[in-house]
Image (tube, rainbow, N blue to C red; front, side, top):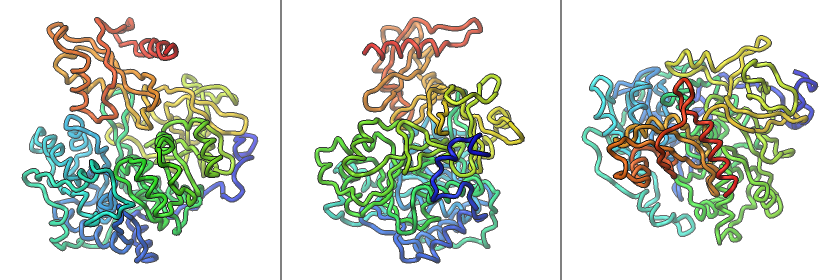
Length: 568
């Protein structure tokens, strides 16, 4: 790879190596090392309550013993279904110590969605928050007995909160009520505190290797239900090591961990890379701009990975001038483009460049990033350590010249091992060029003369709502569960705050016409799917346009919506 072939190398930061020497260690070993190096260092601050590295290791070992007592063995899957909290890290590393596999699940999922995360990965145990335990229990009860869970472990967020909050760290009353809540447990569930009081220890030393499956995050696609992306320490550690180097992170860093840990970005920088580096994390279980501003000020946060809507919201606070953001040294994120005016305010008022990045669940978060010393706005950045990307014609897969739009394909050490139980989808996701295997991202983009990449469109039908990826095919499948829906097509509509929002164009069954309203469908969707997926707009039509082969012409409907949005 020469500068002539890959122009971004001419602008590669001089402080950084082009390739990484990545440790061939397991994720459990990385925690052991950090706990040995920094036993008394705080790993998480949870609204005033500290947990130290040595405590994290001891608690993870105890919980690993409990998991093994439930029958969890090497390679078995354990789902984590909760918001950011210290328990998330304890549970994650307990699964690592048990030589098992973490299945992170979005805590916004509802009963109709959650069953898939039991049956598809053949999950043995779910570790969840108390307010979500009912969802897990109902989803599990709907399954045939042979597919049901072996155990459910339930934690209250209050299990790791201080008895009383410092005035500067007090969340909004509604959030405090949610954090302190103690709903009744489903029959057969085990309380978090009871699992620890059992005092179990792991049977035997860990046996997992750097090439064993350890993480199975799910991603949706153009067809069918979400698919699991298989990651091993060998695919996760390049971004754990590279992310710290790229963003100036050290054991002295303090990060605001607000991106959800179930998401691959929050997983990499709030669970895996942070612990490996020895970072202290300030946890925020739900976005609250006032509390975020106070936490940054109070804990002198140095690193914040976020989505641009959080920055926009923080600037919208009437109190933002009182927040002390002077400790921040690195601000990064992705999921949505950062508006130029907001980026300029960051630079003018705080001297901070926002370094946008780009990646997918399949690439363990970033494959591209903007170097903070030479960042471009509304830009995916340049390929990072050991990554080779190009823009190709989606039909011929021939590389396109600089400036032309095509499909972005990527090769690098962080690319996943394939889709769980989907060999055909795995084969279709990769292409070989010049003896190297590239992952087809499904995103349309272009590369400029400096080797920076820009997103222009999507081959896949993805809707980007405030950084949350919504796959229309999945929402359509869920909508068909409504007794009045005969047909549905889901598209994106413009939204002033979210960027894009979800719109469903619905054909009602004949017997339901005039009896069911658009709002009825919206309300039903909120009860049956994660809030970010649920259509905010529903439009009834007599029929959907179809091609000669009978396929719904979603592109035509999307183009019609774009024309309406352009005139608004």
